[in-house]
Image (cartoon, rainbow, N blue to C red):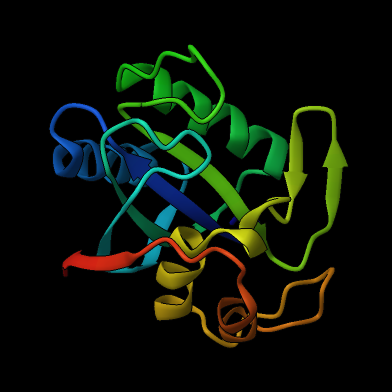
Length: 164
């Protein structure tokens, strides 16, 4: 039996049927990447970074995966492509966005992959769903829990529970 790592992922969508995009992404992650062991509620949030675009639906999931982080990222990028993601501009609108937030307590800095996600501590739309599923998880660089990072987060954009 392969060794499993626990990855926490952020999923977001602000184009088309946003809820359907999240559901399809979760189904494909379950088929191609491992077992989804926990998932947050869905939250609606204003766009971050490039404000003039539709609101996002965001959530976080925990996945037990046999994939190493680079292989997991490759699978997630393929899922984004399958679901119609087109990378036009940084922080622009997208049918689906899947980011690796954490992989166990790993710290990784590669040209195309940084774990923990380098901006998660600055994004309420990431921290609020993570706080729901793993409030005591300790950030391996900052040594704060998710709930502490949420309390300290400088981002003041509203993050409103959309549905369970």
